[in-house]
Structure formats: structure tokens, C-alpha cells
Amino acid sequence: MDLDLATATAGELCQALRDRVISSRELLDQLLARSERLNPGLNAIVAWDTDRARTAAAAADDATVHGEQAGPLHGLPMTVKDVFETQGLVTTSGAPELAEYVPQQDATAVARLRDAGAIIMGKSNTPMYAGDLQTYNDVYGRTSNPWDITRVAGGSSGGAAAAVAAGLTPLELGSDIGGSIRNPSHYNGVYGLKPSWGLVPVRGHIPGPPGSLVQVDVGVAGPIARSVADLRTALQILAGPLPEDAAGWRLELDGGAPIGGVSELRVATVFGEGADVVPIAADVRASLNGFAERIAAAGARVETARLPVPLAEGFRTWVDVTLPIMGTGLPDAEFAELAQLENVPGDDLALAAGRALTSRYRSWIGAVDRRQRQRFAWARFFESYDVVLAPVMPTAAFPHDIDRPLGERLLDIDGVAVPHLVLTAWCGAIGAMLLPSVVLPTGLNQAGLPVGVQIIGPFLGDLRLLRIAEILDAAAGPGFVAPPLG
Image (tube, rainbow, N blue to C red; front, side):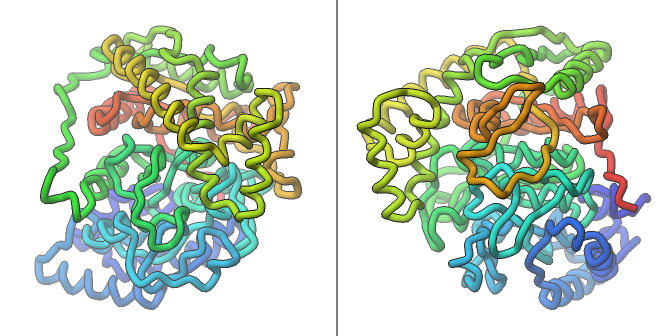
């Protein structure tokens, strides 16, 4: 069995632990040694829980000797994004005011990972309050992409994806309200799952405020890994009702009808859509087209299709539904200033976004009603197709740009200057529809940087989507490729 930490999947490592090819203590020590060598140049993992991890690893090894297994992740060391509360381990969400915050209990998702046998050895970096496309904050600094340290790792699960890509951790827990699992997976060449909204509780996620019990709209928690199989294992651990709801309902994830192979799949591609919102760089488009051609050559029925909801409309819904949620965390003075935009004439995206941050409930519920009509259109679309292939981001990882406020940043896309907010159009428009999405690596661009594709499925069809993603990944490749870190 190949136990190269640069490439081994969580599933392979768990099998090695069960077979006693390696002990949990040995695996933890190897991961810590690799991190000691590589993490200083990446700054992907920013808070460590080494002593408690070693104690937990010793306990896991003792249980293994006695034929006991806590769950499918028994003895597996891993990290989680520093937005999830971790009992006894600092949780900052990248915010200076939380630099010393040590929760008294785990976030629900973290607790489920521990119950499944995982050993949380540390926390991965995130932008302040998970609010950026690149990972930088005043508590821990900047995270770099392991493929090119002059470039971003993405955000807001940038540290998570960089750590998985670099072989510092075999599995990560990220979160996504506007692409925060998907864009880092794309930028770093790893696998990410944004589950259907509501499948995985986000209680214990910051933002909202520490200790909040509210389940926000659109936002989800989900895994980042080096294989689709690991995404499936993690989802089956994480999914399920909150404790106070468990008496009234149960979640039974169903993979749907069996799929015999790639030739049975009906796949829509929408790569040509949305140019009126954001252009797709030629090298990214070429990588996406190449992936579609490979699965077609393998036997899938691949058709170019029109989005059931135009990208501009779906993205505007994301702005109107999601930004009011983000606006609840603004300081009072900033909130009051933005509220004045309600009386400013115009309807460009910047104004719309500013207004949405302080939206009244009347406006928000109108956007939710519009979103529901759009969701019906997507449901009808999936009567004709099993999955949809879409871009994740319009470019591969771009150079660090932390010297300007987010609202002033522009990215050149083949000669077109695009505001950073607009770069999230594809992730936002899909996320607002609450749909599940798997990001697969499609290969490297001409600059040697990873490109990923979103594979989108019907609401609550997450297990079937993962099975299809696994089939397409096997048919088209390249699978996970480790960055050249030495």
C-alpha cells in the first residue's frame, strides 16, 4: 500500500490504520514532520493541538489493538478550518478580536468527525470572518498556493485546500456560502463538496457570532479531500439533523438508481454561458472543454445547454439573498453608512451589493421568493440531465492582492478588468439555488496551475452526484496530482 503522504487518500490511510500497517501515532508524527518542513512556506495550518492529538492517537492505537473502532475515521489525524469552534483549541475566524477565543464545545460538524474517530490536530487559515477570495488576516497572515507561492490559495477555505494539496492533512472540513469550498479546491487542484443546503449542520461556525444557534440560509459545511471517495465518507459522517430535531425526522441519504457506467450519463455543459457577467479565461475554458471531450469519448452523452436560470439572474439572487446575512456582522457605524445607499440612484452591481448588506426583510423575502421560482427551473432542468458541468472560477489562481480593499480589487481576465466580487458569479449563482456541487481537478493550465470543474446535481441528490463525479473522474482524469514541493 502506498503511504506517500503527498498523495495518499484519507481512505487509504484509514485502511492502513485498520490493518496496522501504520499506527495513529506514527501517522501523526509523519504529518507533523511534513508540516514542520513545508507549512512555514505556505502558512496553511495556523493553530496546532499537538499534545492532545498525541494523546488521542495513543488511545486510538490502544483501541485498535483490542479490536475496537470508533468509526470510519478511527485514528486519522486531520485539520479543520478556523471558523469551526473546537473545544479547548483557539478559534479566531481570522478576527483579531477573537485571537484568544477558546470555545468550550465543538461545532456540531467537528463533534461528528471526532465521534467517527478523527483526531483534530490543528486549524487551517481563513480570511477574517471567511469574507474574501484569498486567505489573509491580521491574526495569522497570508496563506500561499502550494503550486506557486506567489499566488492565492483561494478563500475562504484557502488554508484547508492548500493543506490538503500539500499533503499536510488528508482531510479537511471547510465551509461555503459563496464558493469558499469550491474556489480553493479549484485553485489548489483538490476535490471539494458543497453539499445541498441543510444536510450538514453549521452550528458552531463563526460567523455568526460565537455560540449562535442560527442555521443561516445558503451557507454549508463540507469536506475537502484528495478523492471523491473521501468526500463521500465525510458526507456520510457529517450529514444529519441537529440533536433537537432528531426525534422528529431522520436523514436517509439515497444514491438513487444504480449507474452502470459512464455511457448511461446525460451531461450538460454550460461553459459558454454568462459572458455578459464574467468572461472565462481562455486557458480555463480549454481545460473545461478538454474534460468534457474526454468524458464524451468515454461514452457519456454530453450536450451544450443553456442555463435554466441565466447567470446574471442567479448571481443577482445570490447577492440579494446572501449579502444581508453577511451584513448582520458589520459594525454598527459601517452598517448605518451602507444603509444610506438605499436612497442613492442607480442599479449597478456595486450599489446592489452595498444595499443588500443592509437589506430590509421585505426586500430579502422578495429575493427568496424569486429564488424559489429559479429553483423550480433547475429542478425541471434535471429531468433532462443527470449533472451539469460549469466553471468554478474564471481564472486559475491569481497573484496575491492584499494591499487594496476588496471593493477596489480588479483582476485582468484576458484583457478585461473584472471586480473581485464578480469573480464569484458561478459559485454564487449555483450556491444560491442550494444545489450540491462537486469540484474535480481537470488538469493544469499552460502556466502549470490547477483548474477545476463544478459538477452540479439536483437538490438532495448528493450521494448520486458523488457517484457520478467518481465515474467522470475515472473516465477523464487526471485525478489528484501533488504539487512539486519536494
